[in-house]
Picture (spheres, rainbow, N blue to C red):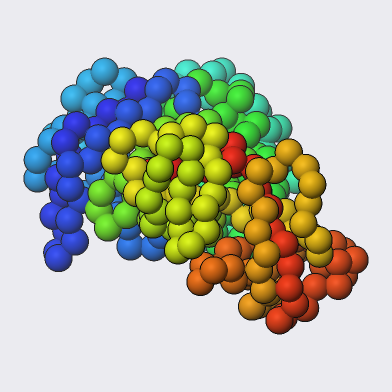
Length: 345
């Protein structure tokens, strides 16, 4: 449905370089990365709002690189809604119909379905200024989908909302994607949003694609230290390998199988590290003594930093477990993890 081939874009001093992305028909695809990575630039290039220096963009099998925005079959929703303040909700939703020839009966049915899916019926005669952030975002989604675009581009649609409205819009996006034939491409800097909404994603950094694949693979098998850090891997180390062992500054770690050729990093997610006050006698082949150097309150959980043989390991633990174990800074502790929990790149 969406294909970019060796896309290059120059925007002032910023560059998008050799961007190759492929999104399937009716897929929910997420483009992730930190602020300044180039996600919105790529989104607006697909929409036709930014010129392309080299490469091509195809939507629905058509090369649209030189097409104006209105000829691409694309709708776009920004985080700031961009609704017309002087128009009612109903007028905002149906605004695009004046530029598209749609039979009245079809338009009525589509409006009825979107209003129902997004729970907008009580709001139809109100102005945007009298709506909450979540309500305005639902109206913006309905307006974009009213013309039934081939592709819906979403630029950080949840970032400006408080947690309650964010969950509400996340549910709305799932419903809309299920009930339409539109392909969704969403930009976000929040990996948790990709986990909850998409099956496939790409990670961008400094104008380049770092990794593309299933969200699960990106989560579990990052291909670079940047991606590992972005998805919260927390623990990655430069290592040397010898058979089924990896050596990190004096620690010898058992691994499930020899890594592929060329690997120089070992990584482990913090939730895969088990903490105990005594050495565990279990199936976990890797168990080491260490000292707690920091306890960091992360709200719903604590991050525990453990130093061992000159290495810093980061584990996560619930507040209840932290209290039950009596953890404190400077305390000696054991940390353990399975050989199968390790990843190499």
